[in-house]
Image 1: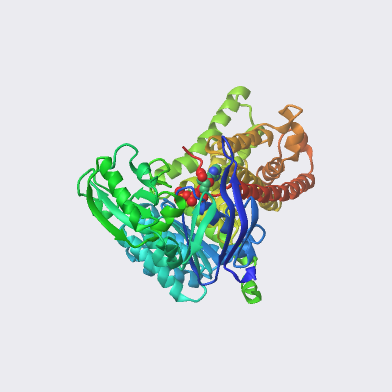
Image 2 (image 1 turned 90 degrees about the horizontal axis):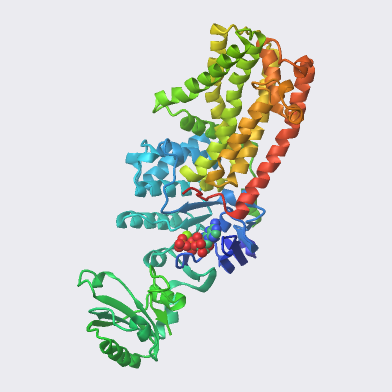
Length: 341
Length: 288
Ligand SMILES: Nc1ncnc2c1ncn2[C@@H]1O[C@H](COP(=O)(O)OP(=O)(O)OP(=O)(O)O)[C@@H](O)[C@H]1O
Ligand SMILES: [Mg+2]
């Protein structure tokens, strides 16, 4: 049975030897991804996402547990796995600077065992798909970050992988380039049945748009797993309000609000609408067990010297699920990101 | 799943050959940095040549111009050592550059082609570049220093092939070892190459070495490669015990030491790769 799955992991752990004490990057992960599925890993920095990808792409050995990719064991059947997977990591400056775009891709086509002529055809096809025609004979060192990432993405498709691993593929890309890349990813899926994707990202939109199922991970564990709809329904029982204030409440601020009876969580969200509206203005996202708890929140805010400038009930988003499970918003560390009751 | 398994072959020889060829091309593109021909000329020609000349001048002064046969020993040794240095330093540099500077190593590792043909190909490109220095040093020796070439291809050709295999084996070993090192330790392998230079009879006859290191010299394939190449190039070997051996014995010792060293080096490389996978070093950037 596990052999029919694209990815199958059981009790997978990874402990890094590190200076003061060992770091447990993965603390027992169970994961099944079906062929043809696009699967997303969402989690804060240091959650263990890259570690999981490294193990599945045979770059790193697990400390314990088992994992199979396309039915092959990641520890013992690496040669077989490497034929059917590929990997693209974002946000890095990789590339043989002295080669041209075409040469670098051709080189990898050879490492994937493509016959010469097929290799060139494939390379030129991917250059077109990723929109690098103008740069095709340009040296890699002269490419911009986004162009390098497109090149990297093209390399990732050279061997028509069964399972593609994308580790934050749109990191550092502008809005249009990121959208292009997401579109390519979806187009790739449509190109043949059974193509599987494992994606890590910090962008909720990206996860929602690309993934059939999503796992939320933190501190090396999967906290929740399901379709975006299923995950959202987890928090549907609660009411979520977006509260805009002229400034952050004093003495205790967020923690005080989060600690009120009936409040499930309270975090700062810095979305577009609060931008530019005045330097001190803040937007909070408050999850309540019951609408009636709103009164005490509004009172508490007023008591702490803040004025309400906006209030809206919002539909739960993936981010709400994330905040609920992980206990803090994206981009916020443990100290300043609010807290849960 | 059986049909899927069938679609997944192991690494075939043809694949390895393809990677190897590709890597030679990449190695060539990177090594022979034609965009800066001046720098390239300095590194491939001027530097090795001046190193050889310094040795020659030193010996001439010490021996009062009576160097004679010893000068031939010296020049051939200094010339050929460019190949050893090119391969050893080259492989070490290749693997580190790939990981730390180009940051491509992880992408090469996740291809079905193993790092091995890739590294061999890159090092062969280095051999090509280092041959320029060999030829140049020998030419200066012949034209200005009275080196007389007495080619014996029957000896030179097999010695070169075996020697290259042995040197690449040592290079692969060092490359694997380097994968384990952090940036500050990168000079270890260079130091080892330097020690080999002294021990292998490149510029000192093995006889003048301290007694404790002489067995090492006898075990090194590089010693026998240099000795066989000297005989194949200038018609006589080095001074001392080693020079007194028959050509057949020298070739046999070269073959034997190569046959022992190369499999050991490959086994060590496989072990180093696994250790790197275990420690997560294949995509590390250890610098800064
Ligand atoms: N080579 C290493 N040595 C020691 N600790 C490591 C090593 N690599 C990762 N870690 C630690 O393991 C944990 C998980 O790291 P990982 O890179 O998998 O996180 P991530 O989910 O990819 O985070 P991010 O979103 O920031 O990329 C972190 O605490 C990290 O510090
Ligand atoms: Mg990561």
